[in-house]
Amino acid sequence: MRIRDFPLLTDENIAPEIVAFLRGEGFDVVDVVENGWQGEDDGDILAKALAEGRVVISHDTDFGTLTLRDRFPFVGIIRLWPGHISSAETIASLQELLVEDPDLDMQFLIVVRLTSNGIRIRTRRVESIHDTPCFDSAGQVSIKLAPRLN
Image 1: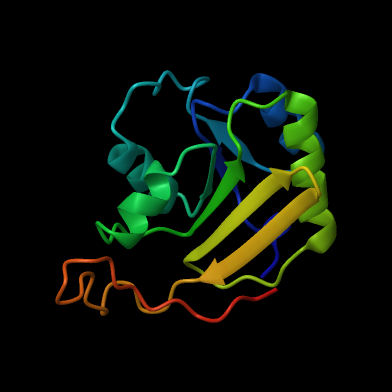
Image 2: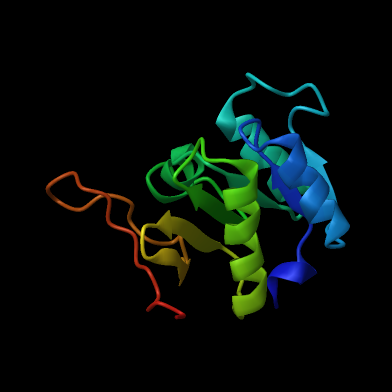
């Protein structure tokens, strides 16, 4: 599957201009702010996304923590990093992701990072997250990640 095959759920930290951009690109987007869900627990937001088969887009690390450490089921997470940058920079980052158009399986994590050297995209697939022990003997997060897709 490709990123355009998935409906999206944008977190409360995603600016309205970004939501409009995604819709203009043809995405089915449900926005946390538009639905009055701001301030709701991230686990509840993730559950809403899963129920509708949506990929969560956020500037926060919280959703990655929920999926990796706390083992919440999910479809996909796109983290835009750093947070609190201009909408134009966020749109440029998303455009780069759309150009790269990675091949995706369910339960994927994508980090789109704007750096001084350009935009870096890392895509990982989480294998059997619900059958894998979450913590190793030292109490550290221990999730089996598939090799990088790019």
